[in-house]
Image 1 (cartoon, rainbow, N blue to C red):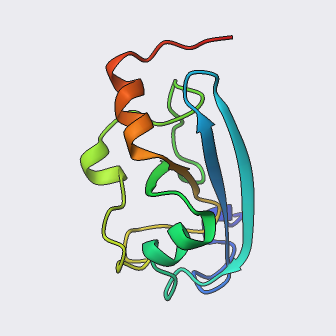
Image 2 (tube, helix red, strand yellow; image 1 turned 30 degrees about the vertical axis):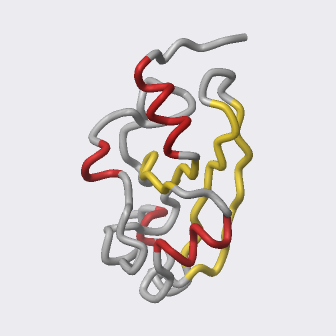
Image 3 (cartoon, rainbow, N blue to C red; image 1 turned 60 degrees about the vertical axis):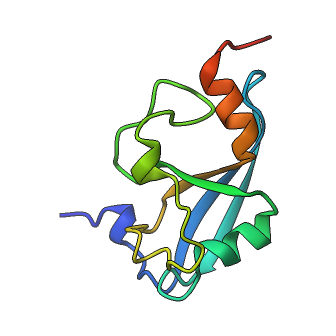
Length: 119
């Protein structure tokens, strides 16, 4: 049986994708792929400093379901937004090939009230 990509690498040498969202309405984001990331020691705060945004939310995990919204997972903010800057990524359940969204929280809250897409 083949190994799933989420388990192909140890949590001390993971690859994750960061989706740096610039605009929710126009669905613009830039992907940043981080290789050789130690999920056991890297904290949410360290990742926020690296990307320079103020909110981190899980978008999807390897072999998991994807949201219908192409820019952000708008479900379950309470458990998917990582607000504890001292928590390690492994403690939060991140595995190899996870995809995270970084964004401005104020812009996200405004978009949630009226989630219209523009072209």
